Length: 398
Image 1 (cartoon, one colour):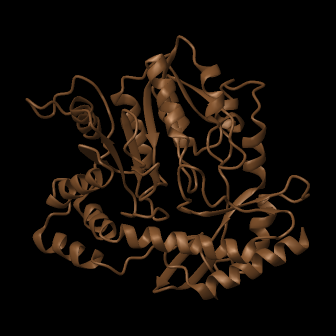
Image 2 (cartoon, helix red, strand yellow; image 1 turned 120 degrees about the vertical axis):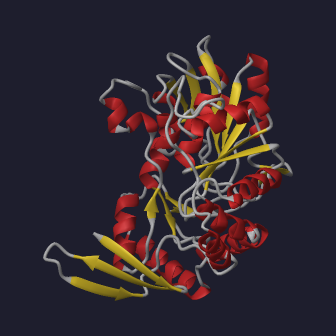
């Protein structure tokens, strides 16, 4: 069991061993630490002083309005987390039994889970080896008479090639779900991520540019969809009479306490984006040219990298994998995380006979060789220098 205690940017890691021994390691660098030194405490105290701590509090609507306005959407529906946002979005679009949803093989399981939960079928495409996003050139070949939607998932810092996805959706009359969980403050050809397709989703987990601890949001321009999302968020209560239900959903509500933190974070979005980009540039400057190590690309023709996290990928001819890298860096006092595991290789889906004999070479390579290093907003240059030294030592051993 691991417990973390934070004070400023200094970390104390307390590890409870099997024999109940407690050891304290100072200066371990976590993979992420948010910045909470704005108006978070002030707004939280206002919640406590007024008694508004539930999902009915006034900060919730204000947060919904400001997030949706930031990305140019008409409606925002705050929910309990990013996974909940995807589930609400999928259900609101009427996706159900036997429908197919095209998505990347390389992503977090929440994307596929939101689809399989309603009896629909994820249809996978491989990754672009340079941007790590879904390869949009493969999408059209996966469209069938059962295809209902395309779920485009922006990963790690760069957006998907949105125009190509929207063109296919228009051509084949498909819905588009935009998973912008990692893209707070990012743009595609000057337009905010979160503004594309029928419906978009965000996450406010602590490793995101904007955090509420846990939390998520669905944004859309469709009033009917927005009303549907509001109902799905709240156990499908009927408007005319409470505690009577024509259908069933989950409790995905979002509290006033979470919204208070979110509003304080949102006030600093531009600052956070600039900080992330400077961190990415610094890492790139210090790590470029290391043999056997691929860095994230800095820009495409449609976007500059926002560096949600700073990812690294070992070359194919390197014998070690990302798990070995993670173990080595941990011994150096540096936190890291392996990249996502592919959907077609998830044991839970293999047990169900899904994706049998399917292979996605780029996705499999990224899942085995990719990892990211400390990238949190509270990271100091001194810590980054330690990380750089650790990565160089790692590559000397590989």
